Image 1 (cartoon, one colour):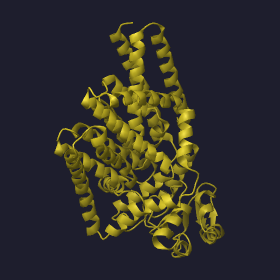
Image 2 (cartoon, one colour; image 1 turned 90 degrees about the horizontal axis):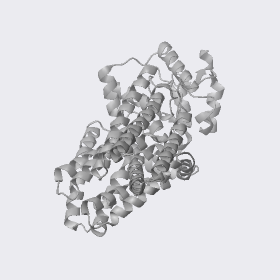
Image 3 (tube, one colour; image 1 turned 180 degrees about the vertical axis):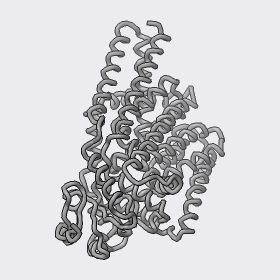
Image 4 (cartoon, helix red, strand yellow; image 1 turned 60 degrees about the horizontal axis):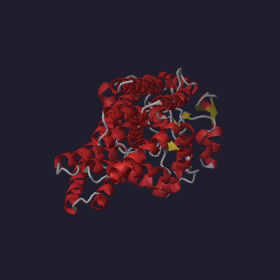
Length: 497
């Protein structure tokens, strides 16, 4: 088969692979259950649309940008409360996923991959379970990843070229990523390490490194300063620090669960093995390019990718939650795409049966990834999503919006469109420990019980087990004694039955 025709068939196969994976992802938009975080983020947006100020008026441990943007969208569009709003925000997340994949492809091109390799990088990223799952949810991670990838793309285009404006724009995008979620700082930090190492790895001049760092810092500082000024004007600057920054460090210190990183590493080896093998092949190819001193720009691109991909992937070792893996999975997809391209070029050069064997191996690898996605993709409404929709509709239809509904953090969304119960509204064992570390008081102890009694609060959103088991014993006894569970995910005050 001629090389041009072979390339054409490879492009068609890659596009088809990408399209099927995007179909899987969009099915999640329509049918998947609400993750624990999704009701939280919709509730925050709803409160913000009503005039509340994030951190000052309610608890959150994410960056403010996602909540502020969602709140502004609700205030502007004035949608009807209900399950349809959940799907609407998920559609926005899916659009962000498409932009993420486009940024991944553009970054691959900027790092030296051809069009076919860049397309393959986007297709491989789309095939990963964690991308399909977490990039289609109502959560800030797709947006922070888009900002991070766009910033890295601008940095790749501007570094080493004295392009101060481009680097400042990259820094601004990094700042927006951090304002979306503080843990996204892991990505820009990796870029900073790359620059600091570049005099030894690439022979860069220290003066040039200092200028590039200054340009990045200026861009990031500008957007952070604007956000800080807004919070200062709203009397919430200290709250911003305590909840968006300090709380995240406290979470790392308070979380004594089984290390998630090793668990997800095992998952990739057992369920996403073709991708892991492609990453391994790509790492060899990129390392060879990084050692080639005859092409300085190609060498610099390889070093940038290897440093940022390695350092962000190392986030698994510090027990980051899996939705933060979106920071490095697109980079690993670029590494993997180079591995597939390098192996394909080598086999095509040798000719013979190797081409057929490679085509078979790639087909089996793609089929394995598609099979894993198909197993985990809901093609009809998840049973929990049916319950969540019903509960949302019932509460919206029967409870005034101004009536507060307490929340136990286990995916039950009954509180989403209701007034806030208390500042630290999310009842969860880990966050209780974080609250104690920051304030000295557990807001889910006597303060939570007192708030339930005041009024009184008629409804508590939550399953019959879930987060209830993590509450202080006295709080748990109060809820089970004063409230009757409906068998789905709502506790009703017994006197109000």
